[in-house]
Amino acid sequence: MGVSNTTYNSVLMINADLEEVKKFRQRIMAIETGTPTPVARIEKRAAYSEEDDFLNKTPYKPISEIRDLIEKTVCVTIGVVKDFSPGKSWWYKSCNICPLAMREVGDGYKCSRCNAESQNFTPRYSLNLKVADEESYASFIVYETVGSEYLQISAEDLRTKHILRGGNRIEFPEELSKFKNKTFLFKVSVKLENINSFQPVSITVMKLCHDEAIISSFKQKYSIDQDAFFPANSDVITLPADYSDINKVFSG
Ligand SMILES: [Zn+2]
Image 1 (tube, helix red, strand yellow):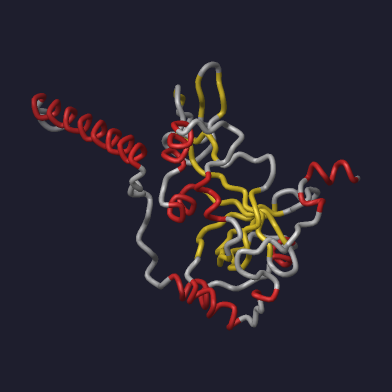
Image 2: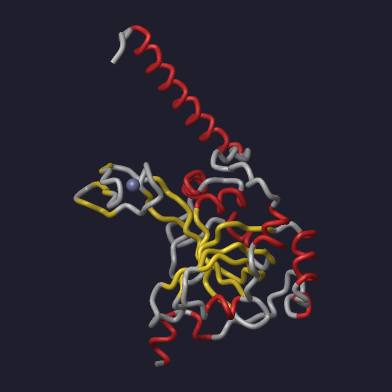
């Protein structure tokens, strides 16, 4: 290694600390005043536009077909978020370094990918959305990048805000209702998970589009007369009673 200047190094350290403290204070102040915090994870779009990606670059599959897929597939689909899947939390305890969930080990947490051990964790979104189109429905998972971009708040900040308001573990923060009864185009990654489960595939949302012009072009292109089935802001769609695995066990 080269020559090390201790004074310079310690100045750097102090600056780094100050920067972190400053950011933390800004976040707390933003939460207290209700100012939306800038979401650091918003990334620049790919070279082609969102419109091109949803309309031309990625194949469309209706939800009924997605549920029957038997190999890893990336596709786009359209649907209405009816609700959150019952019994699933809206966030998980993530590793501070990578997005993997931490395991509780002793009085701390451990990541099985990077082996990091820590006394704390980073809350990240794992939103289980019940998504329906005119024929079928499925559970889609939204993770941190997509969730924080749409909600304009990170899971970490939303959880802090929720706790400061006196919200408990079971209640979902009201901010999450921004998903409900809305039509979206979803770019999803579908993986075969458990052939014997109620939904054999896991469906992860890679991109979310709520741009009305793009949605309208999409419906036109694939001749989807979705408005006949989902009038705006209505709750006419009732999901079958066996939606959850719990009900399935009882009925079987
Ligand atoms: Zn990790």
